[in-house]
Amino acid sequence: MSLKNLLGKNDLKLEDSFYKDIQVFIELLQKWGKVHNLSGRLDKESIEENIMDSLFPLNFIDAFESFADVGTGAGYPGLIIAIAKRDIKAYLIEPRAKRVSFLNFVKASLGLNNLIILQNRVENVKDIKVELITSRAVTNTKLLIDLTKNIKQDSSSYLFYKGSLLENELEDAKINNYKVVSRSDRNYLYIKG
Image 1 (tube, rainbow, N blue to C red):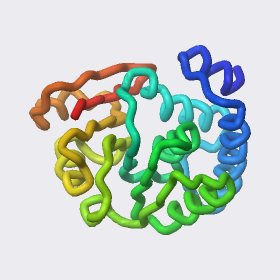
Image 2: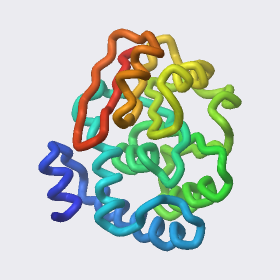
Image 3: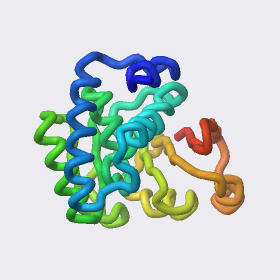
């Protein structure tokens, strides 16, 4: 199934320009990934599933004008969201130089003017405030909320891409006003600001 059909089946309607851009991303990730060990699986199907995983929450979260993705790695979910939503201010926070080089190369290749890439640990980022904070497979929920307090606004929301340990994390984090949406073996934790 093509990526367009996969996304369409999941109610994600994107511009044709997105598919052109995402093809460039896939090719660059495959090229750089082999050399720099950026991402686990580099076959087209795995990459497309990661793209689907990155974008799926756009179906159920509120609109936002800015977001920061913590520990972006090879680009999931932050870079993918930035490509899909070029009108949104995007910050990718990634401490590892190799991955930052890759993200900057994709940014330049696609002319992503909405995107700022910060080579740093999130707890050291001081001068940005965003409406949405995203993260996939970085650390537990309680610690993520704590580490990102310097970039959140009073009304910021969180979107964390989680696996099966989510229930234990929710008990530890003592949060309310959240919802969990599941797809395949992914749990999306959305905490409204």
